[in-house]
Length: 338
Image (cartoon, rainbow, N blue to C red; front, side, top):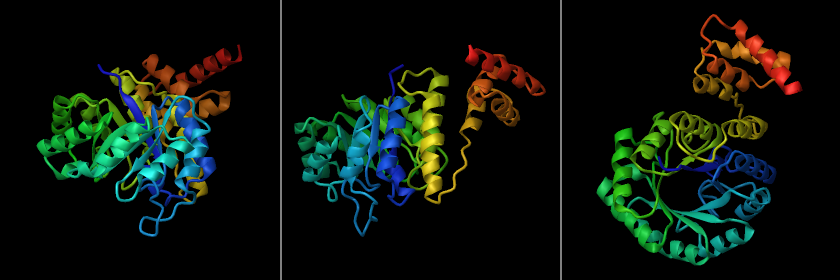
């Protein structure tokens, strides 16, 4: 299996969810949490791309360059990326973004208009940036035309080309057909960005991987425009279960959501209750009623509920063995104290 490279867009696509009101502290803390979680590329900026803060698209709390600088201050491994929509973003703004700390750019055009990004791709390559051709609304054309447009991005010098399901309208068979065509005809890697408007974001991301995509997007807690994006945490969990190689760390991705993102959202009046420990039930393969008992045991003995559930899964605990969770918690607490 090919290695999968993860891009998290919480600080850009997720910006739509907070009306572009992420603070500089949010940018720094979330970026730091994502790097700790092994995310390869972290996208940041106004939801509508570089210098998208306008009366038409909504004003951001901070300009893109301040956000980039705040995030970049926390990164040593992950690439920091911006999104640029030709007609909104400019080459001059891209130079400013690079100066602030951006290492990559995703040039986003409508799926049939890759030529709109030629100038920007070439300029970005001249600047030494990692460049992604981002073909939006990929459901609006067929695989043949999508491939023609992707080949344009490749010819301009892009390092990766994405089939982007901006409307969350694609079915798994659509994703497979289009990604397969790109994989067959392009020499550069292929990526996919899913939205969850039909509840298919994780499924479509996996289908894209099966068809040959090696760059996949997500957002912490599935944040993002519309119904949101592929949840980064769920994606990592499923990739682990399927045996794919990647750099993501499941626990640290969950921590980035629960300890950094969700408190920030709650402070902004967006009340979010984390259910990420419930996701561990499926990851560990244990009975769903175990969650409440594991939480209580974790609180009582000062151990991570996730570790309790994972150990219960390793021991193949079944319904009716809830008391076993206390024994597991005690053992973990003893190990922790040594």
